[in-house]
Length: 275
Image (tube, rainbow, N blue to C red):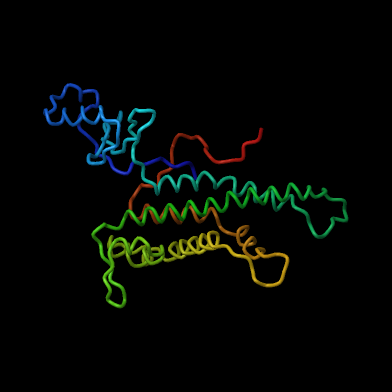
């Protein structure tokens, strides 16, 4: 998958050119508000801030104080940022997995004089880097899904539990992702991904479960010198390439085109910098 186009959280397409704004005769009240904002040395969130882009989009954002000046920063959709971060980890997962499995030591010595195994120190480093990329990838994908789902729930929405208790948005946002995608989002959107794409839905649950294991990882209690071997085998075996498409398809099912691959032709990804 190519790198992902960043998306602003909210914008409007205007019918006028940004260069013409200075010619508009603003109301005196608006001029006063602008002057007070420009002269103020503090942040005031009573007003929404927006700026026009070169393609006539009015993009909403926020101000940030830096060295006594106010900077305007567009508010980006966090679910797309998290997804893009995962995508940038993806390529190197398989590069380091390939090297790890092809070059690590074998129990059985090749009697025909095969290539000698690499240093164990190198294998340790390969597995470390592979695990770093793989775990970061899954965590970013899961965070992308969580951020997207949470923004889909209206602030005035209430959820009724099986016992008839009515819960507000604060309670809802604290619940696990499975409840949200299986019950809450279908109620909010009148679209049920589990019914329409059951296999893809099950793939999302696998990602959720894997993420939970990563976050809440604990050693085995049995008396043994290897506490994490079952989990580490799962890390090596997990279907990373399928996972990113499962999350993309879920997000785009609810908001078409939100996850969009860039057509610039450049390949952008995270890697280890070696001096």
